[in-house]
Image 1 (cartoon, rainbow, N blue to C red):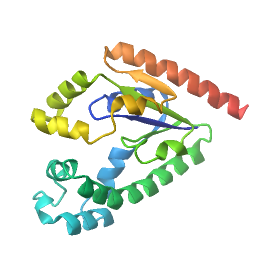
Image 2 (cartoon, rainbow, N blue to C red):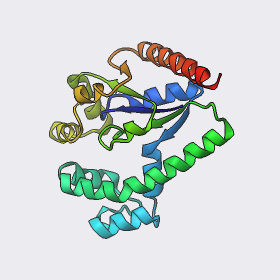
Image 3 (cartoon, rainbow, N blue to C red):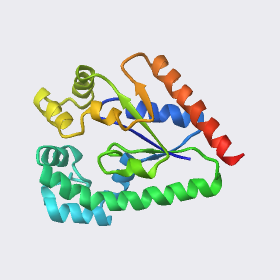
Image 4 (cartoon, helix red, strand yellow):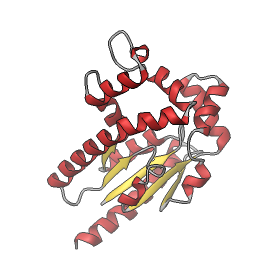
Length: 204
């Protein structure tokens, strides 16, 4: 079974993803794959530098993600351009990792951890979709604390994404991540049990 996991920025996706991994899920993390395909001299890296210039490089030739983020979050055309460079490469690696995991264990619960799962239409490719959410005030507070952004920059990044309330409409399972770690873990465990039960039914 392939399940999609998503949420908006600063809603706690990494925390939830790690909890599923501890329970035994195979996590395919789109953000990690993005960093991999954007490594120096990789095809995506070359295309990004060609499009955005060498000013977005750090001294070690890696992308300055903060500088690149500042450029694309405030400009929908440049964000679209970046996505068109990166997404096909990420999709290719995602499918390769998924195939390898299922070759080892055909009954594995594979979770695609993808920030833009819904926006890109990838939710149509998974069997179930899990959406993590918090209220807007909590989201802003966590983003400010996590990334040390100005309030204006943080609000701009939140506004660039699909609203949480809209994402929730696509969910088969919702995780309310406003509470304690224990409360979140209880929700994750409940969903894990429901999904693995279904996975067993499919194979039986």
